[in-house]
Amino acid sequence: MTKSLNECIVPTYPTIQALDVNALEPGEHKFWFAVATDAIGHPQTLPVRVFKGKQAGKRVVITAGVHGDEQNGILTAQKLARELTKKEIAGAVTIIPTVNLSGIARHSRDFHSAAPDSSSANLNRVFPGSPDGDDASRYANSLWQNLLKPNADLAIDLHSQTSGSAYPLYVFADYRLPDAIRMARLVNPDVILNDPGDPGILETVYNRADIPSITIEVGIGRYTDLTMIDRATQGLLNILSAYEVISGESNHQQRECVEGNHIVSVRAKQGGFVICHVELMQKVTKGQVLATQYNSFGDEVEVYTAPLEATVISHNVESVRAPGSLVVRLIH
Ligand SMILES: [Zn+2]
Image 1: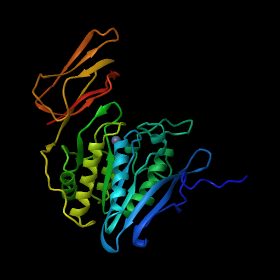
Image 2: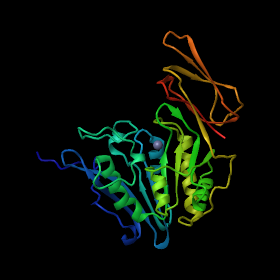
Image 3: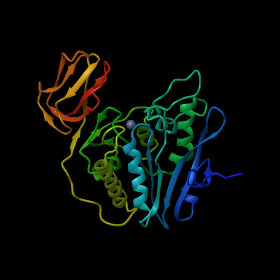
């Protein structure tokens, strides 16, 4: 018996190679965006949702899953989409919840190349990519040229800490850009870092293309954190209402937020098992013990202390630490 593909497994939405939200009819749209082909020539397609308003307004692009093991960002993007199905929109909101297909499928931070002469790559260091580069670079370039850049007046990229470590709700914003500071504070996060950016990072590439952008870190790497997802989703709704993309008051329940210019990472001096003694957002003094490291016999081999007075914004949750792995990150 011939059976066509089950619609529940692969919904039959239109497949597109480029998106122009200006030309869409008002309403909700779902597409497969054909970002690239794989090594045997099959299309790689990723889900795109567009909420287009009848009224003109800001066009906001929200991405998640650029790092494949940062599932709380993906879950935030999906939850926001479910919230927006109930709302009246002005302008457009484009949501791409699963950017790095090869990484997400492997629970891995990286983009995984099938080219024999390429290694896996950090996709968030290769934007805007190049049409003549390796497969990671071409993938990033297709996203940037055909999907992200043409449809964004404002942009938000959702991440989390990488596997093995935790973050609070933490926003990167370039303080030279008033819209970036405004969006960051509307998220109502625990921490904001004034970050001028680095080449290849999607947020930086947006900012340099005059599209104000922030990166939001939604808690812990890999494992589901519903409290953080709820807070990040509310933060995105705050931004959308402040920019009048959706109507209604933003949530003004402002919490204490640490804004800093510098981070210091305390890294494992050698391999071994690290037990952390501090919590997220804990204030520490210079010399305070942060973590203890044990060797495979269980004997203490190292004690890590705070190099300065600061606030803890990340710590390991997986004890096994390779030399140079993150133990604790501080902001001041
Ligand atoms: Zn990330």
